Image 1 (cartoon, rainbow, N blue to C red):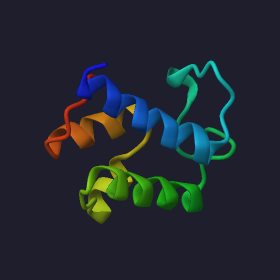
Image 2: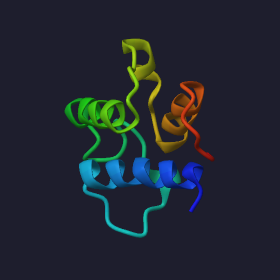
Image 3: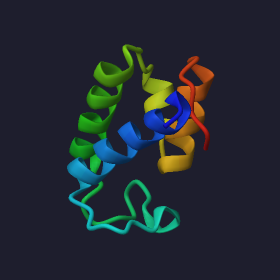
Image 4: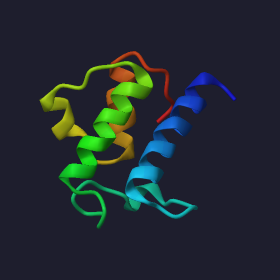
Length: 85
């Protein structure tokens, strides 16, 4: 598995665990403040897990831009994390 795909799997694992999602996940349907379990507290937990997993800092502005898996992967890519969105 490439590091790009490995990093995507890490993101998926964080989201699945914190949002208590059942596999298989249809990522297009999972969105902040739309998905039942994705509230502001869980959102902060996702931020903390991403910061720890990828050794990055996420600014308050970036936190508000994280709306779904795709925007999270785009944010990570902008910070130099190898991902394939």
